[in-house]
Length: 79
Image (cartoon, rainbow, N blue to C red):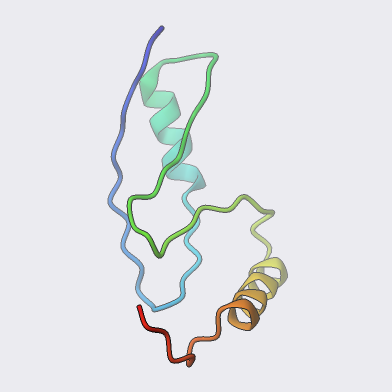
């Protein structure tokens, strides 16, 4: 079994940011030379997440609105 590991440093510019990483993932898969397998995308930071969606501006805005309702920015969090 072949295993390839690639690290990409991606830095957000805002407190809440949706960043398209599709091209970077495609490039890593292409560089690997692996034709058939599994690609796992993992984040190392506790306040980040990875989602798969259509990448449409309206969908992204809906995600932002829903997250603000679920986890309001101005709540008095302990952590």
